[in-house]
Amino acid sequence: MSQGNERVPICIVGCGGMGHRHTIAYHVLEETGLSNVELMAVCDINRDNAERVAGEVERLFERRPLVFTDLEQMLAHPDIAAVDVVTDGSSHHEVATAALAAGKHALVEKPLGITVRACRRIIDAAAQSGAVLATAENYRRDPVNRMVRAVIDAGLLGDPFLMVQTSLGGGDRMAATPWRHLKVKGAIGLDMGVHYADIIRYYLGEYRHVFGRGLIVEPVRRRPVADEHPLISYREQTPTYPETIEATGEDSILAQYAMASGATVQFSHVGGGRGSRRFERSVHGRWGALDVPRDRTGGAVRLRLEEKELHGKEILALLPDLSLNEITARLFGADGVVYDLPGVAHAEYALDARLLAIEYHDFGEAVLQGRAPEVDGRDGMIAVAAILGAYESAAIGRAVEMEEVLSGAVRRYQEEIDEALGL
Image (cartoon, rainbow, N blue to C red; front, top):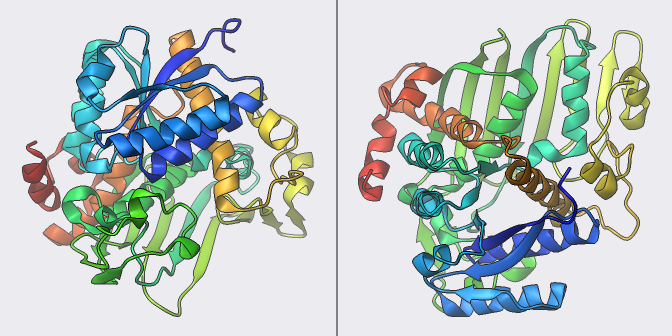
């Protein structure tokens, strides 16, 4: 736990849609009474964006944060101890390395970087500075996924031999912002795929190799509208927002992973197309199987054994050692593996704010206690490499070892991006 009322003064860097979303989550953490961070400042090169998020902070916290439009000026402020990097993925390595070099701790939104080289640049900067580096990865924080991990660790399935992760459907609207469809900006296939890559590793351990491909299902994306996407920000509704954009980056991944444990993962994430909407996450072992609901829905896990089927809280009787940490229990209830929260609609973004709050609390504890965060820079890089590994597999026409991707021995797909980034 944090020491007394000590808090980490933090600045949000990037005040677009994600910056607004993070602001709400900081307020959710504040309302728990366990907050160990102080949202002290906001920073964006666009002053209108920075002022809008500052106004939201003032409305929620009844105090106005410091407002910066220059990164160097913000990093020079002696009272700011940490940054929350929520700029577009292609700039994460620039912002994070500057912050770490200035001695600031850094929480960096996923993907940590959009290539392995970009990730390594950030990790090396953290090692040189001694500051805490965390990757913002919220899916594993869901109590549902905590339960799944506990079932696997307890051996209730036997040794898992298969995991199926399938997410299909998306249409041709832009995924909130135009840059999420550009290869050199970190397209939505990577931006979304790292969530699933982290969950796979959280459940089953280290990757060994991957065979797969990325693809562009929707070659032209149309401008989203507010009633189709609840996180469309003020910036994304301006007249300069393009009506269409030609996609150059993958919106979909098809892959098969071999894990170091011997398990196989069949992975399909298709972020476009019409007529196919499906989600499946299942884990299979000799003694049983798990069916897991879509993230951030509050659905119940189903455990199928030879002679019975258990759902949600019924599974808790088989997991006497499972307990949620204090911040998670405060937000979801002590038995929050299936949550029914009064006054909170089971909507993805309402629940997401609670998961982000857990993520911030872990980061704050890591800074205050001088420990590693749950998801550090290496964890973030491995999730990125797992998705890029599928793209690299297609580029060179064979399965690739994860170590080849992590070491940079295989990077044909990434060469164009690294060149654009100056890496």
